[in-house]
Image 1 (cartoon, rainbow, N blue to C red):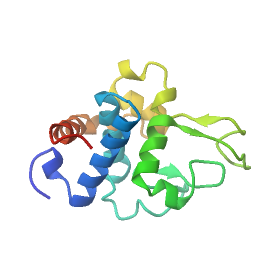
Image 2 (image 1 turned 180 degrees about the vertical axis):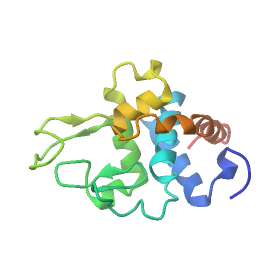
Image 3 (image 1 turned 180 degrees about the horizontal axis):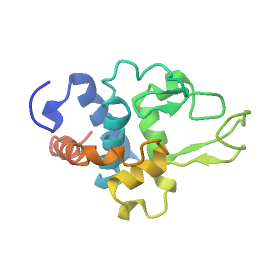
Image 4 (image 1 turned 90 degrees about the vertical axis):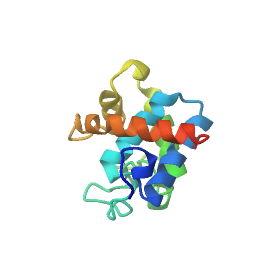
Length: 162
């Protein structure tokens, strides 16, 4: 990794994930702040995909860059949550439950909230918006990544987007 805090401080895998997260947000019509929230979340949850354990389910059944649950009735399959484009889309848009399972997120028709479902997310601090999507046991953990996430997003946007 190079020095600094922006895109040049990332490994090739992290940089590709950051670019993909921004590109998905752009494609979905989200503004810059959404990309910062998503990148800060991915930094906290998996070091933007650099954590070698992120691609396999943890003890809670979470995997992928955003640590999304792969148990039946949740975010999707292991293959899906490990696909950065799918995972980022679900982070931004949420996931509608189409096949309810015991121990799942909710009944058929329920939407696991993404950023889109968080009322007023645009006005919330980055760490609060991230927590409302992730529902982490460490609700303020995302705050420490805000400055770096902002720099990464600005670098990605300055280079022509995702």
